[in-house]
Structure formats: structure tokens, C-alpha cells
Length: 238
Image (cartoon, rainbow, N blue to C red; front, side, top):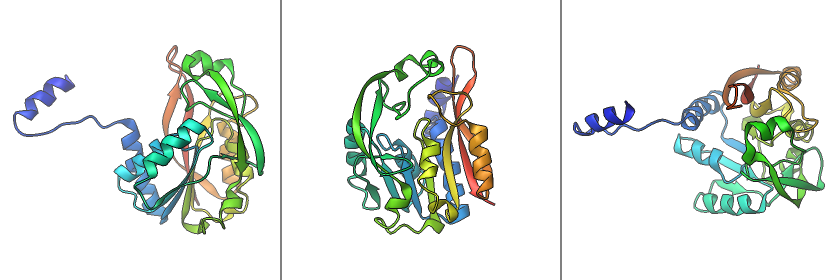
């Protein structure tokens, strides 16, 4: 039906395109960034730069600082950001609760890679998420890079997509969280990574820090039964 309508309207000189869920999400998130007055985004768990590119395509013109631990993904991230002077790529690193070194597990699909072990609930829902290797990487914290990049926390939004390691990222951002106006946290409804904190705990922690849930979006679901496994929670300071 969509293709028929597209073809018919093309004869009238009207170009119709599907709007992806990622694009719709980025458009709404840009409204949030405008609402809270954010001119800087910390993109933690950037992978190849998909999130930052969506922000740019939908109008965000502020500074973006991306963090990615995987060697291959980091190389592609640097290429994506190369022509954008306001998009900074931090040296390859895991963002967590302290500074040092750690091992990260590499998933077949790259985006499911994590410092944490993976559960059967995850691999059962998506076989390509299985681990196929690991590599050693430096570890840093949000609080330790604030001065490096001269970040004004009062106007900086942070996106955290670290596959079960979100709680540790928050642990390493205690000073930053006292001032930042908003966050996006990927949150799991069931344990997809061994020992991870689930969405209710994350909501409770953010509420104790003065944040309210602003939106819920983009679920990862089990195609075998339709159960939602992960979602993105956007928090804005009350």
C-alpha cells in the first residue's frame, strides 16, 4: 500500500519517504534539548555515530562529544565525525565508575557489546548479539573529562547506551549529575546482562537526584513473543 501511494504521488511531483522510528525519536529529542537549553551532548556508547548523526540530521547544532570503546566502531566513528568541527571523538575508552583498564566483550552485531556478561534472555531474543571476542580498553569517567573538554554541566545533556553498564556510568558522574539538565538512559526491563540494574532501580535513582521521566521510547523486543526487553528513558530535571 505504501509503495502504491508513493508511486501515485510521484506522478504529481510529490516525494514520499518513510520516517524511521530513529528519525522520529531524534526529532522529539531535539525538542527536549531545546526545552532544557542544552548546547552540548555527551554521547556515551556512540558505536559508529548513529545517534549523533540522527541529532545532526534533525537540527541539533551544538557540541557533541562521543565515547566508544570498540576498536572497529571507534574507527568508523572518527570517520563519521571528521568533517564536523563541533563533533569531538574521545580516544577509545569505556565510560564507567572509575579510571583504569577493563575488558569489553565484543558482540557479533557490535551494538550489543558490553563490559558485562550476557544472559540467555538476550541471545535467545537476538542470536547475533552473542559474544565473539573481547579486547582490553582504557576506562574513564564523566567527572574526569569535564575539565578536559571544558564542559558546562548546566547546559549539557548526556546519552548513555552502554548495554547494562549504565549504573556504573552514573557512579562515575556524581558531580556532573548535580548540575546537568537531562539524560537519556537505555534501560532493561529484564536482566539482559549479568548483574545489571533494571529500569525501576534506574528510575528510582534518577528521581532521588531530582529528575522526572520525560519520555519513554525505542524498545528492543523479543520477536518470539513481543515482550519489550529494553527501552530508552529520557529524564529531565524537575
